[in-house]
Image (cartoon, rainbow, N blue to C red):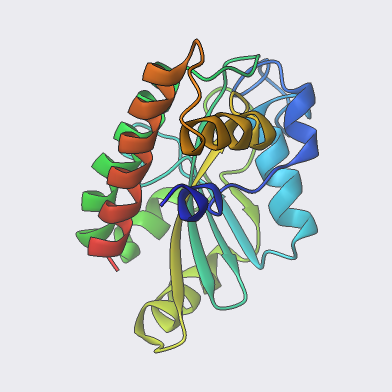
Length: 204
């Protein structure tokens, strides 16, 4: 169902100006560059009113960022290319990372996670791992969403290399049985997206 697959995409205008994934990581900086995917993600969730935003990009991560907005718990995986295309290879990397980490989510010891974040900086920088919120309150809020019948868990892919408009145009050509240059790559993307959506459904 191509329309259903397309519906999971949300265009974010700030992604058009992204140059790379994390920006320039240097000693002393206190935030990620605004023209990086990490910077766009943090601005997006801050504007969305996130009560918690954690940068978990530390090797044993469950996601690059973890956000809590209301009753929604979001696990965000970021990847940058610097340009849009209909290539399946970029998608394969970030979707593979997300599916791999869905397994980590099921076995996550949240107490140990929170302890690893407390007073932690990102690498050599002065960027606090806890970007928004009181880290001492994270575990109780996390457990509340996990146990709530109305709690929502979602896996998000924050990427700069797909234009929803371009993808819709490609999908329309497939529906109309029109041939185009990237048809094989787009067909691979459809399978990758279907597998990703199915993995999220299976993990509830």
